[in-house]
Image 1 (cartoon, rainbow, N blue to C red):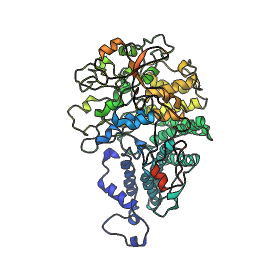
Image 2 (cartoon, rainbow, N blue to C red; image 1 turned 90 degrees about the horizontal axis):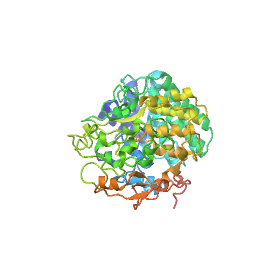
Image 3 (tube, one colour; image 1 turned 90 degrees about the vertical axis):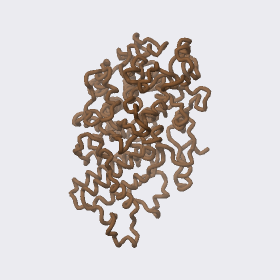
Length: 592
């Protein structure tokens, strides 16, 4: 990736090599172009070929493992900032986000062709397998070769883990295929077999990729520490899936997750970003353009004018806004949930919501008094929040404008698709959360474990430490998990908000029932109606407290969300995939 200076020669090389075959007419090697038979000689050849994987992964629609922001018009839909719209953190209601609304409401239909982030990108696997078959031809040491073998296997394992998360069983392919390969018409490989192969790939990668490629934490090659973090993420996902959905060796996967995370925590060069300013540190580094040298950021994607840019800041309002569900999950400053804390001031006005709360709330959702601080919306001078229907400015469907990634300076004076907001693909804070959750799921979490993971995140924002025996939040008493796991999951939701994890988390925890709750916004009172004159909204009364709130999807196609436990934990296989290969069977519930 290396600042995206993947030269055209690398792409031409990939095109030639991916199209190479073994027919007799290729026995005479061309002298004026790169060929498969003459290329694989040096370490630089392998490095140049592997650059192609990073370039291919820029297409988040096809290969979403290193999900960032697509450039140009596609920035409005393909950004990891928007993925929480699949779940209950964001409430997008812009027509361009119908894809998110449909899945969020449980009304996914079987597509005719590959869907976003879905059954696509298999050319990525083919590119990797071509490399793996040819790396042995290079006349270099095994140690040098295995760096690139490990890099390729990391990418393959990561790609397959994402596909398994979305579809369950998927066809495992570990060699180059041609038009006559029987594997083109193979059935889906059982999940546990695929994931065993994934674990082998990721483990090999963590044993052979170097600790440091010498790129100074620029957005370059994935190093060993990042590979360990990716392995920890994948193993946590698989371990919890097997624990709650059924499957063998759940404990093994959870232990692999904990051990990989622990290796990064104890021996890696990363730490949480903190300047000792709890009122700003949480979102300060999320809103800058250059993350070089940041101690927390492990993998990131740079966007730079003239090389690769985006338009994602201008599409920020397409998130619809944070939900009441998310906002109410954030603790009070005494470390207790709003259901238990005497410090909670209620939600009669939006200002009340922020009183005595975890500082991450005000660094995630826009407080009306912070409009000038953040130059929101490009310092237009209007009062915020603004609700959809109000004239002028930037409006929100929920009233809770998201501020976590907002950077007005990346919009002011910039034309379409010239913005440079980076994408944080992997950060050390996630590693701490993985460790804490894996240890708790194993039933082994101690106070010391919490102090070197969750409580470091809390220290950054000046919050009280999580105790190993916290009180049970009554809202989660029926979830069938311990109070400690409740709090670790809450911490994950708050810390990783709008970083693309919530939908997969709910599914791996087998908590799809949480998606049956309608997405609400701010409380709606006569005073609010006057304050937000012109707002065009629907409202509903919360039967639990008798108060009225914005009901984002009421009287729309996405009202009354459903979650079919027998169906919605997986996505449907596209119809054209099954028509091309009848041995690919459909996931349950999508045959009708």
